[in-house]
Length: 165
Image 1 (cartoon, one colour):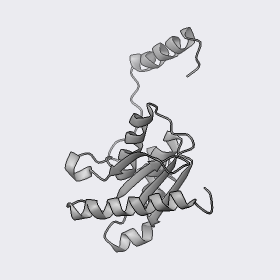
Image 2: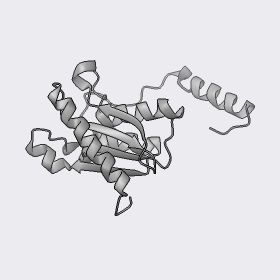
Image 3: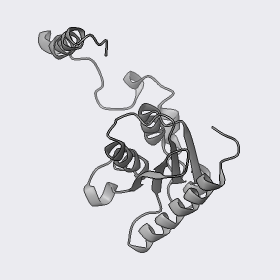
Image 4: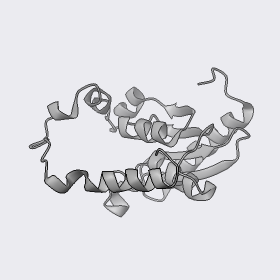
């Protein structure tokens, strides 16, 4: 991550925070995000829609990444920047990573967010453990003979097209 963001990126962060204030004024919570390119052009916007959509992963960052991917017609946002009003939770950091986001900036960190009633700090620790050790009622492999068939079919299709993945 660049130590000194450009003036354009800083202005877009201010826009992200203004979008957050607007979302709060409309009854939402203060989590919003923008995906921007190197010139500060907004490719995607998102607000936390967990409650409205009854979707536990509809975090602002995920929504912004989805919007940017639709806008760009791709599932990989190499070279782009994620701006968030609040520091992303672990899931959102992983979403940015999988999307190829290269920089993440946030206006309010996890500790500040916790003082306002949004304490998601434990999400980071969860990822330091093997999922088989998480405290879910059941997490284990349940092999069935046909389990690998979709994977084999996919690999066969990729090989027939001369691609490896």
